Image 1 (cartoon, rainbow, N blue to C red):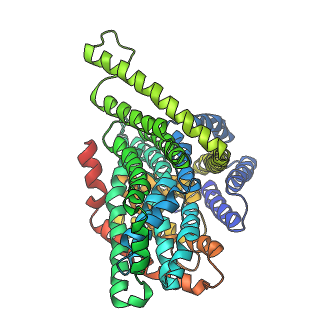
Image 2 (image 1 turned 45 degrees about the vertical axis):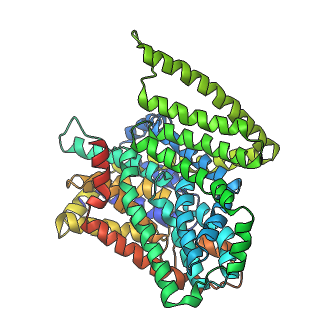
Image 3 (image 1 turned 30 degrees about the horizontal axis):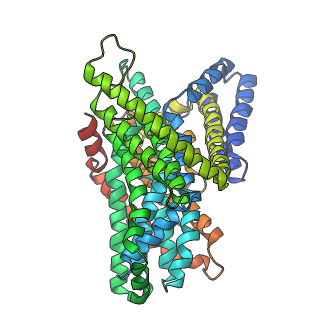
Length: 527
């Protein structure tokens, strides 16, 4: 299986990088440092051609000019705005009141709001922490079982791995696309097909909603079998809330965020906008919502800006608004004029929203948080590029390909091994490390076996989501432990999350048996 000393160095480099990561060193420095160390050793021993490093600047330039990755900071900004402006908190309270009359209603609310929040935030840690701070004290105060409350929050927080628009799917889609093209070129296909982030977004909708449905069914089953574990909110409290304009509160808290997420996702799936353009709409739409919330009743300008944004999207879908044309029909010309007017109204309302955010001190927080998370992501991307370049220079990709194709069971055996390895690595490594280190190594070998790239990407996302939930090392468990009250024991968190892990595994088995769950919608929309 190992045919040269260079290939031994490739496996040693991977092992050293994993060991250093487990020791707690920064991810980007670990990836780049281990790559440079082994590149130097390889150059001294004659097992590595240092000319490979000459391609590194071009790789960095390609990453920084990749239009798809521009969506990352925009989606991060969208999630940060929804979190810091308390929109998500209002959403959770309102959903709790809507379902509060029934047993298990708060748990159902956590699953639904967690799905919306996870999709908009996209970072598992941020979502679990936010949901833990908002929902856990409320559920414990209402008499919920601590284990059930903790399991519900951890499971809902990890839904951002799979439900679009998700940062995980944006990054994974870019890596899968590159791996798919590499696999086709190595097979002698010099006009390779491509897979886009929009394909993965569409592929993640059905599995993601199915997981949410399974979570809700479990909440209902627990409410039926063990009523004391998930009691209803007292009727007097619900009646008092409804007397205080509950219907207006529902419209104010529930409808705008849902409309925003549907608009972002719908513009991508409908072919109106690319993921990057839709992410920009999401970020600015979230800022409009935050400004609207801060202004109480003086919201005419911001409401007009939101309507103008919707009008521009509608005109874009109906007319050709490209200016650089020799012949512009009259209808398109009037559409351009209308779009220009709407853009001016939109800019006016956006300025008002930003002014309110700045006055309230939120704008600086949003920009700093967005910049910090974005910097972390892209520094890891740059370090991972160097790691994968040196790994390929040692011939590591050939080793992985021979290992996977030599396994008993062919395609099925290779998928089982890769899924198990990624599941175990998910205990110790964040999705960023796995996406940029492990996926580029194993994905080309798997895709050469004619595995559907969309199905592979969704399987990997669900698999990582499962490992982040699994005791005793799951990331989301540690995130929740950090914000949970002292009255909640660690074993209660572990006990509460195990049923949701079993639900995840059941969903993963269904997805492996019925790949159409992930592939039907992308092919129906884009083929």
